[in-house]
Length: 120
Length: 112
Image 1: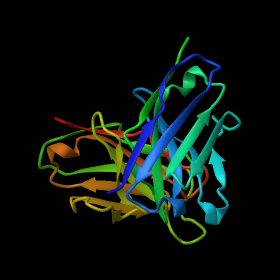
Image 2: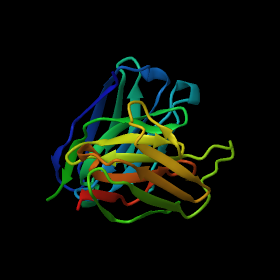
Image 3: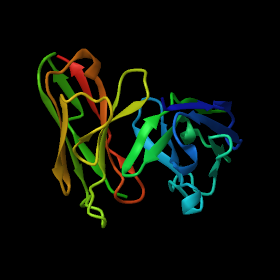
Image 4: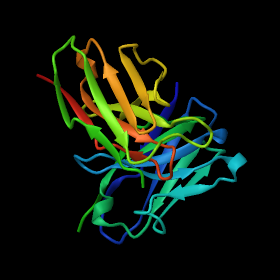
């Protein structure tokens, strides 16, 4: 059974940093592309970042709204993916979901999400 | 970015009924590899989104055959027949043909 468990959310001040973690199991993590998708309270879904596998040189892509502030990374030995979020803004307030891609299938599985609240 | 327009925003339904949700893209979703990367998700109240349909018309593992997807190019439809209580929630379409992946704004399926 595929499992994705996000941790690391919380209440932070604007301008601060936070690192999210996603622990995974139930699939071959090392050759799976992983994403973060977020959802602001009461709003729709927004893709945030993607990290490809070692066969794609761990290429990372970002939404324009977070480029230069967020960094996605992975540890294949721990089957974990991370999202380092710097210079947080009010508009980054959202539930952040860890998701995975299968070939030709985007966001096949989702975690339960972790809430990040940026407020002074 | 590719704009995904879903209609309607809200969709009242009676249990056992049939409904359709439309999703239109601002440009063709046919990829250079010949595939069309248009997917459908359901977010039930208080839950994470879950994949229903991938690449226009393929039901994901465990998805009942009451759900069907169709369409091509820029115009796509999700049809739900014999609606059950567990089908209620917000439906989203997603395109992953063009970077970045973009979602529709959602269609809320609710009881009449």
